[in-house]
Image (tube, rainbow, N blue to C red; front, side, top):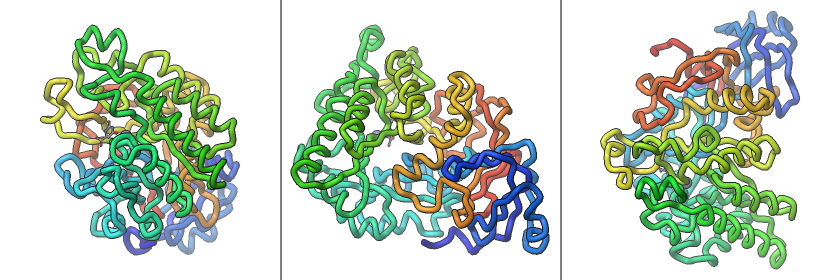
Length: 452
Ligand code: DOR
Ligand code: ZN
């Protein structure tokens, strides 16, 4: 794969508290970064002699946590086609500010990324990405649900998964058969199928979670079953492939939001099926009450759910059912969000608030160890998508890292966001854990106070 730019100068990261769940390291360590990779990891002070010869920069990380760079396997970068909302350059700048060094770009761009050519285009240096962009290609041509795309060729071009995010595979169009075909073809190509689990026949005209609150607001609501029934259908297809064709398909459930769907994933795991899932920070930070006042900044799909579902997401994260976190960073322009609730588009930005919410809620409030929270944002997503050399800082891995102060409390200001869009419900929210530096493949791509 091509480097973002020519190799950066060597950097020594000195005396940081290294938290690398994949390598089992949790201690003060120095890191020497050379040629875009981790050249050496050693006890504090042990790399000074070698660094004195090669390192152009020394970052003093004393008192700070050094983690593998965060990995977000679910973002919408809007390029090509909707660059008024976001570009690869602005979206990845927001990623860097949030501590992310790898983002996986969903294919619902204009046009849809359904070819090896677009898949390569997204990764070209001309896009100006600040961090690594790994494309997720469309599962069906045009994401129309009728005809599979060329999975092996897409993988060869750099796609890390297939998905028709926003348009569930096998609801309209070719039905169960196309989803079964997608799972089979993806397994043969060695790719996961990422499913946006929503039975859209049950959600026509719906704009929030179903329940008493939707009734009070006069809005049509999406039921829990619209999500869980599709997760169950997909799991049955994975099981059928295993039992009748001995094919081990990998289903990854995107932005899971309900207890029922989580229970379906739990049961599939007990059955030995390769089913993984992700949960978004907004689904453990907020419940449906955030839409009160017809707040379109809290409108997304899947919608914010009942408090019991929010608690279930936290439970699923704590007990390990949830494989990883992801943001569903979905930028939209202000004028689009400033419409009636039912007309406003779904989605919120998320790259700059994920770490602060995860640390504040999962670590501080629910007592999850820092190393486990970080694993959900680093080694775990790397494992879900089989990303070699990422999610760890072992020698030889990509020099992708985030250096942050885990005790620092700060306030998120949407106006200071690096994203081109500001559609977040977290403006003014307290965050825990301040990103000081982000390095992507050995290059400093974010420094705190650079231009904030
Ligand atoms: O809230 C959402 N926004 N959910 C999706 O599935 C798509 C996304 C978008 O592209 O805006
Ligand atoms: Zn989606």
